[in-house]
Length: 139
Image (cartoon, rainbow, N blue to C red):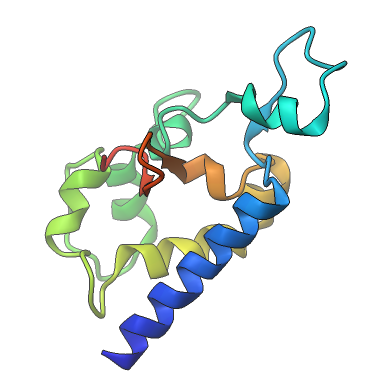
């Protein structure tokens, strides 16, 4: 329980710092917005990863859907046919197999994700009108 509380505290601390510091990873200015102030820019930015996981985990030059990625890259994982994050939550909700912990570790330590795709918190997360932060695809 203490570990879960510590993870929740850390998560909300990071989210708070991101909001306060105006994290703009994964967000791109629309044309003509160059003259706006920093605060105005943050209010009208466009989310370049609107589908969250499915923005990257999709079929392009090769099949990178979640199911295919897991089946080909995670040894010992049961074979899955899913391409939607919500279907992963049956096994990977809160607890030892917590998806958030696993994805933060694999994505935020990845130069491919943070540098090549120029993404960060807002690649996966979004905030609703009430101010609640959620994972895109799980709202």
